[in-house]
Length: 62
Image (cartoon, rainbow, N blue to C red; front, side, top):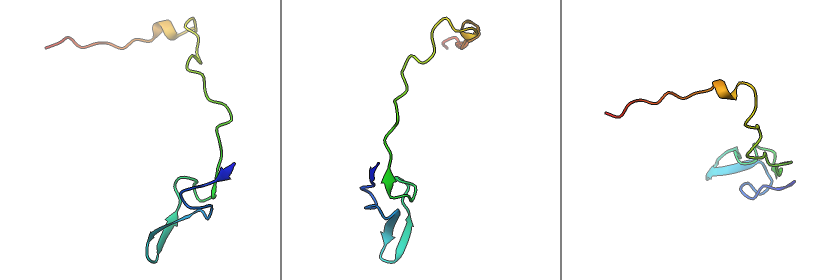
């Protein structure tokens, strides 16, 4: 985990002189967590049951 660079680790962002809001980047925690593992692009094999039944009907061009 690393410190949020948007709010500086406080979890709050300054909106104006006397207005603050929860940092939406770190969701108010002040810390950013890295992804544990990125999802593979081919997460579902082509021979999965039910995939053959899926379809997307196309409209005829006008």
